[in-house]
Image (cartoon, rainbow, N blue to C red; front, side, top):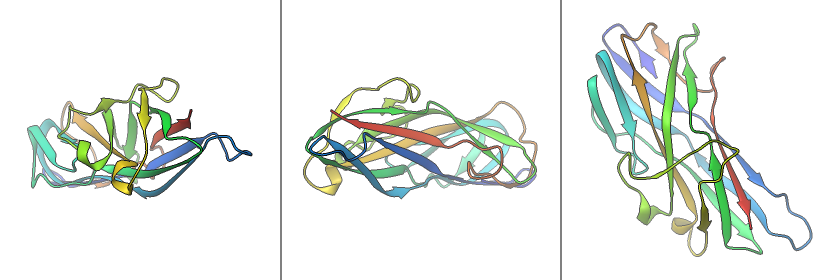
Length: 183
């Protein structure tokens, strides 16, 4: 995210992904690949508000946030061996920072499985934390049916305090963790 006084936010969100269990003789295994970072796009702000990116990549705004409505949902391709079923658990929040340590919280993180399921923000399966499964999902067929798409919300309760590029990859940031466990 890039912030200038009454200006622009370019939010690029780095997703950290985990797969469990490891490949072990004949047991189900998981490989996550083709990771795509979540990006809220160019956002102009004039005060408190929020920006939400759906699993379809469209961005919606409220309050003092405006923009073109174009972003990128996070994504990762799931490949399973010896199974087509897996559980998904993921971080419910993450933090983006700029180079001077100013922070923005990413909350209400959600996901869908499969490109046909991509939707606007608020319609995905909510992430409940990496220790809590959000359910069991089927991964089979083409790449389109085996991709997890991720959306979330930036919420600023007041004026943003610092300029700079905001990212979870900056010092003090925390990324989204997704845990896929084959069953």
